[in-house]
Amino acid sequence: CQQATASPLVFAELTEAVEFKPALTYFLAVRLENAPDGRLLAHPTPTAGSGDLAGLLAADGLLELSPELTHFAAGTAWPVWRYR
Image (cartoon, rainbow, N blue to C red; front, side, top):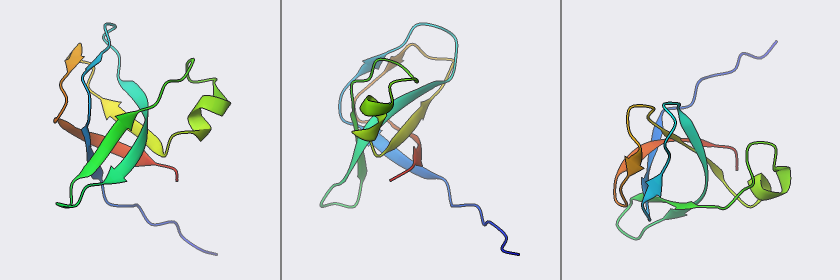
């Protein structure tokens, strides 16, 4: 029997500003890029919602944005859940 090990929490930096109004945690589909200086960059990927599997296939992971904010500035870093 194999035991799963938890991956370390990784953060990625937004490359453009994002607005999200409801007071909910927002999981933003992103394409990830390693910058030459070592930062992990998160490029928002357009989707038609969480059920848009084709849209999610174009992304590398989900950026977890806080429910306390409505504006997420470019250059800020947030936890990312990688699936690719």
